[in-house]
Length: 448
Ligand code: NAD
Image 1: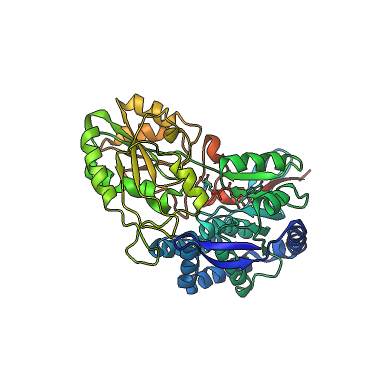
Image 2: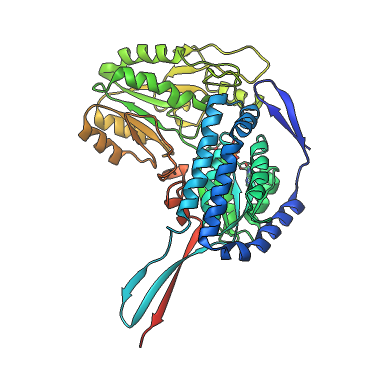
């Protein structure tokens, strides 16, 4: 049995049967059997089914947000916004079905055509921090391209994916096209990675497990997309709107209790503005509303588990620059924490995945680029400056898949999302995600 916990109360909210290798193989067989018919569905009909799914997600928005909030400890207002994005993602890929296609290429002696073919039955492995969102980022393009799917949610947060599986059927998407197997990574996930009938793994999770997925996929030369960890930079220049940058910075780290791959957990501040910015940052961090996820005003809930809280705690030794308030137990609470550090400290090297930010001074633009890039990761980041040319210079110089200027924004439905370096490869969202769920076929037709 898998016991599912509400991290804000430590109560068990569900007990589910635990699927093993046999159930995984059955799900893969169902996905394989459903593939020929699904790939043959006319594009306009596939689009219609995805639109119906989007509408059902909207209709059940409050229910899905409630599930996500209880299972992950997310503030209800944030959970609602995430479910809104899930519907938008299905709408976007419904619209993309007939807009991702091949081309004709001028060649001598004939006509050359490319086709975009679906891959087959694909395995989608999802983490616990944004369970429904990240599932939709993979499901949308996979289904739009004509693949069938085995979806494996994280063992800590299976409830929203199971409910989504029901809505998929209610939308009229045929049985076998989407199969949800809510089991352990080491059993179900590993089996999907090694299964000869799984054509691709779309994986989001830690860099450590991503490495294992890549190794396991080698046996069958399986395609993989890896969306992994991060240690992103928030670079604040002295010429920036310091008040605006300081007001935004806490939400770039403490959103989802810091359990966010895009968390800008290294805050680099130009030395000449350092003291002033720290004052503003501490004030802004005091304003983060931590507490009961059911409360509409709450901005930050608990961490996902007791074990994870232990890990997060291990990053904070000594007296931090600032430690906020958090509720007494029950619940896996951890306060917003700011630590002055250097870029060589463990807190600046490793992904904490909790509400802990390292604040680090820099001397000038070249120093900012050097420090921001001095990390094995490259997922996200922000640049705060009023100098437009400098913003563009930094945007080009930083080794990161996603950047924003004078903003915290990382993720938008229509724009590509993914990492450089050990943050992974492949892109989700936008039209680019469709490339990861299709194969290019080239056909030459002689006219001679
Ligand atoms: P995790 O790597 O522990 O687990 C991710 C998923 O992989 C889970 O479903 C898990 O069951 C499964 N898994 C575990 N072992 C496996 C194995 N041997 N084979 C196949 N699957 C296996 O990550 P997590 O703790 O759930 O999530 C946190 C991590 O995810 C963080 O590092 C975070 O940065 C990363 N993340 C990245 C992105 C991104 O888009 N780049 C987004 C969200 C989270």
